[in-house]
Image: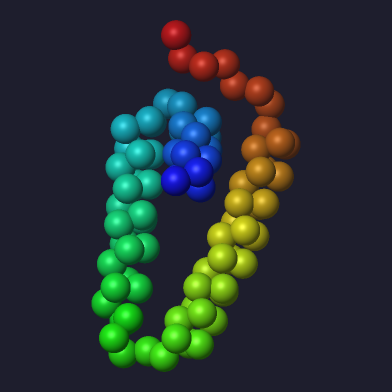
Amino acid sequence: MCVHLVSAALYGCLFMDETPAAFANFRLWQSLGFVIPFAYSNFLCTHVKLYILTSMLVLGMCGYTAVEFRRRRLPKQQPPE
């Protein structure tokens, strides 16, 4: 639950001008993230699933770090009135 709120807040901060499109994109990838593991859950062993989840976690952490560094370099944006 907490990770979901942080992700939603990040989308809200990064895409202030296109908020509805940003949250629609967020929900699309979130639902795809639920569907794909559900689809392969009966076909793979537990240790393979753990390798996949660990690699996705590391990839997500690297992506989040890259977004934070890029965000820090940009000048401050004023929120729309």
